[in-house]
Each structure stands twice: as C-alpha cells, then as structure tokens.
Length: 346
Ligand SMILES: [Zn+2]
Image 1: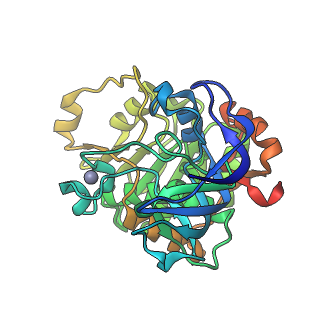
Image 2: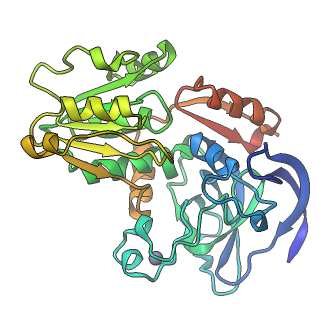
Image 3: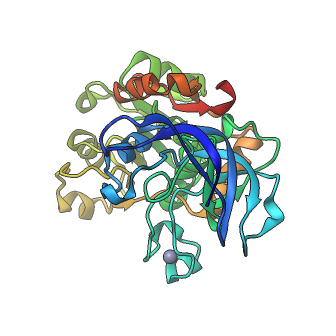
C-alpha cells in the first residue's frame, strides 16, 4: 500500500549507480514499522551491495540501498509494537528469522534462515522513508546525533563483535590491518577500551593521520613484509585483518605471538590466503572468522558512541546531490573513516 510519493535513490540494475527518482512511499504492514530516515552511513559494504555481491536477483529490483540507516520511528503496522513511535532507531543489517536456534541464542548473524539484508532484500536508507520489519530496528539514546549515529550499526558494532570473538584482555597487543577505513578507525578505538597496546596499520598519509588523531599509534604498512617490530613487550597477540590479502594474512601468521589470534572479516571471492598448518600447531595460533554483530552488540555500540568512549570518524557528510561523487571517493580508497548521507542537507 502506498501513501504518496518520495524521491530517493534506487538500484535499477545490479552493478550500476543507483538512480535518483520519485516512487511510491510504502505504508507499514503487519509486523512492520515506518522510519523517517535522518541519515545513512556510506561504506564499502553498501557499494558491494549495489554491485550485487550480496544478492543480484533482478526480481529484487528496484531497490533502495543503504543499511546503516538512522531515523525516527514514525508509524507501526498491525501487530507491531507502537512503544517505539517517536524514538530514534538504527536498522539491524541482517533480515534474520528470529526463531531458529541461533537467533533464539542471540547469535543473529548466524541465523539459519537468513532472509537477506536491508538494502538488498528489503529497502534501506537511501530514501527519506523506509518500511522495515519491527524486529530490525534497535532504539538508540535519543541524545545521539543522527549523522554521528550512522557509525553505530556496522562501523562500531562490528568491532564490538570482533573484540568478543578475539576475547581481548588487558594483556593483549593488538594490530589492526587497514585501520584507517570505516571499520578500522573504530576497531582501534574499541580495542583500546580493553588494552592500551594497539597499533593501526594503513598506507596513505591521510589515513595514518586519522589513526593518530584517535590517539593510537599509526604505522605505514605500504611494505608490510618489512615492518619493524611494533611493540616493546613482544609480537602482537591479536591481528585483526580488515584487508584480507595474501600479503596481510601471511604477515599475520608469520608475526603472531605464541597463542595469538588472527581475526578475519573480509568475504572476497577468489582471494585465497596461503598458510601452513605447522605455524598454527607449533605456536598454537588461532584463526577466527567474525561476522557482523548481534543485536545486543549494536545496542552496546550505540552506548559507546553516546558515552563518548568511541568517537565517530566520518570523513565526509553529503546531501543527496553529492552522494555519487562520495561513492567514487570511497571506491578510490580516498575516504577516511566512514561517509554519511544526511537527509537534512536536501
Ligand atoms: Zn534465525
């Protein structure tokens, strides 16, 4: 059912830029809520989604992309809780089923009946209004600025999950590879909440400066195979690889301390990393995959930002007119931290 029209960006063909156009605004159905979108995060994942990497069925089109959306819940359909009407919320990225074993245990990223992703299998925040399943919205502190809050649902929540996966302690020495990007710049900050020994690796002067602006030591990893030793107390105990190339994975395996953990998050197709099992056995190192974040971790990420314990690093905030050039900067690796689309800049 539609209630008038709105103007926003929609994907018309997987792999092509989204198109600015007018289309019908949906009304929330049973179990759904209506969000007036205030801002939406812009990172590499939304570009991957637009490219069709997370689903490329033509039957899903046209589709409004953008999963890192922040807005005010303005309406609820039949059976949906009206308790959040008027509240600021963020979207949960995964359209999880809510009833399988993993969902019931609070491990939503591992849902066994995953229905897809916001911005791919359902509309996202690249339009001023969006209808979402009521179970896909998470309230955040009302005081949190909506543009700042765009880092919450992915760029900060994902690092919170990594910290849990890696079982970080105060004794750890953490290296984040690709620390100047949208997840990395928040990963170093979330790591530092647990341990003082954190180093961020990246390759451009802008990104290295951004890492240092958070108070964390930055090291140029343009030639990762010839890095100096990074800590006075010994080799890293945890390497978080946000780059996911053979060079970065091999460096991590070669340089981890005994008992160390390598955490990986990238999902590239055809990007094998060559490792020797003997390295894992002799030094008892572990390889850990980390997938997105639970709903509880998204709520926790909102608290960290609201309390000022993690500073949002948003390299560029644009109105809808400047969104596609922002995509280009992101593709070129020029953006520091996250980007954001601010609907108040219309
Ligand atoms: Zn499930």
